[in-house]
Length: 299
Image 1: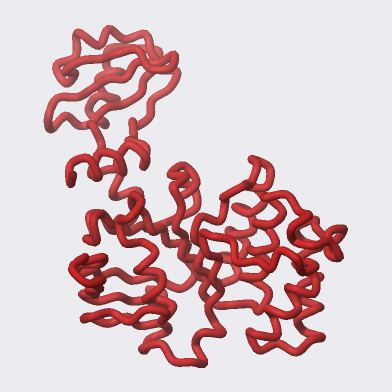
Image 2: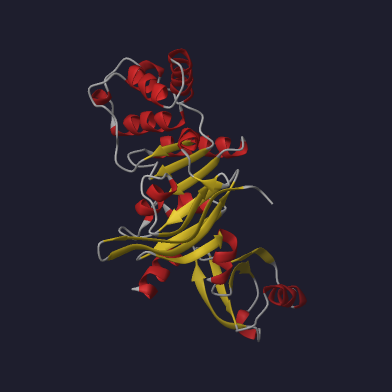
């Protein structure tokens, strides 16, 4: 089992009469991309600020790297906020050097790291431009570099794909995979469910301050499965006692099985009747549909 690098236990945080986070518990393991999901106002930002020790919980515990946050631990966390925090009139390289100095790097180390990241993201040519002169996408990439410039162990990304075109979204997604493969831990909050589904192994969903889903994405999708398979074959599905109904679905048939119907038994039936099977796969519910369903149920 991998090390736990972030652990929240029964955390509660209120602002006057509003309970922003209500009895939340979850853990994040080293070397994974962990997704934080929830509608606007659900409590995601409050959770992130407590993990970073910007806010303190009213009750419960928040531990980072096995203990409560200490001043020295903050240098091990990189944070990309949803709102941009760049100095618009400053030049890209000098600003990154300054932010690296604040994180404890020497001027030489900061410059070297900043130039390396600018080159890696194809942005060396903008190093002497002012932030205000950059496109929104390039500003977001500079902010990402500012998050990574001091080589943090835990990387908290709040809507990192904001303002990025599809090509740059792919670039950032691939970079995240490389960072995790190198042993970094990424804590990702994003509204693009398809991206979360692709990048994350586990997720925590919060709604109105309370946790409503937590665990492996594959297991969550199985839990919300409609017990159907996508099939392209020559069989007459009306002849199978396992089938409750079937509908057209993107060139295939979506075949719904009766309660307790087993997909392996259905495949065995297809073989037994001599059907020519071109494709056969489990029908899974997209994470976005699960997200909407859970939020609507709780509402």
